[in-house]
Length: 385
Image (cartoon, rainbow, N blue to C red):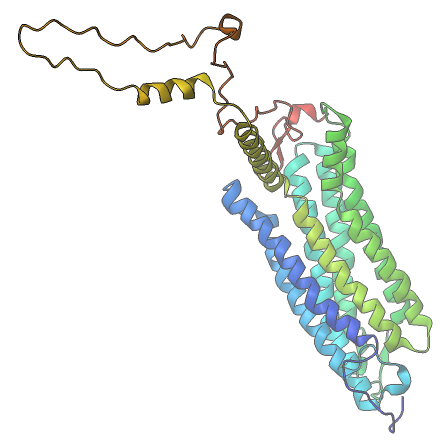
């Protein structure tokens, strides 16, 4: 960092990746959030619960965080340290401090929404309910400390971005390593919690149990991203070229909060998947029947209707006293209940009539039979022991 440093056109270096991620990921996440609320409002027609409001608030926080991250790339994020001027360095740390608050808020949002969802499903079990409350207290506790140290970590506060000011700051390296470990442990606990209950339920097949486990423990994806981000962030704290490595670290920070909220929404998509698969089966059945009917010979019911239409109506019209003419012979008809065996040599073929609107039979062993699809709430709490 020097006064004569040549600053390239921003964003540059790793800042380009941060900017692209900050633009693309909130759009993808918003699509998942919209699908969640469409499922709740129009498919199962259920009023919003507290976890829905938390998800909506988290989406707003993620958008603000992405905007601040994208704006920080115009103030030096992702550049090499030797490309920094003192003025650019102050701007960089100012925007990092502001965006970090919304990063912590977004983390708290998606973690809390997952725990609230678990309480709705398995809250009938007292031990599980206590475990969820303890996890929530731990998660919100360390995240609150994280937000406070980000804001009050220097005395005076302005020393965070104006390092030339007199005063002192806490050991940011130790703090970031500790809080990163908290992110990973909380994500791991939140991902494992539902598995302890799902595998104690009775399912017709193991496949159904595994499917529900994957849906509810999708938070482990956010845990994997948090582990990668923590490793890069820890190395960034000990390297000389911190702004350049921070570009990679903050890229994974954006991925972490967006992936977490996507997992919180995906866990509630079972009604949407059921509707989709049901419609696909219906469309497939109708297409199969239509294709089958297009290649069949005309059935007896069709020939019978044609013969009735082609047969001319006979009316007796003659002068008074004239002999009555002999009516034409009746057309050969076959009783519809006669089987094919009695029509050997006949020109008629007895084939079953298949309706094009036939619907597939519903299966009684639905993979979510033990759950209320209107929010995945347990219908049979007596099965949870």
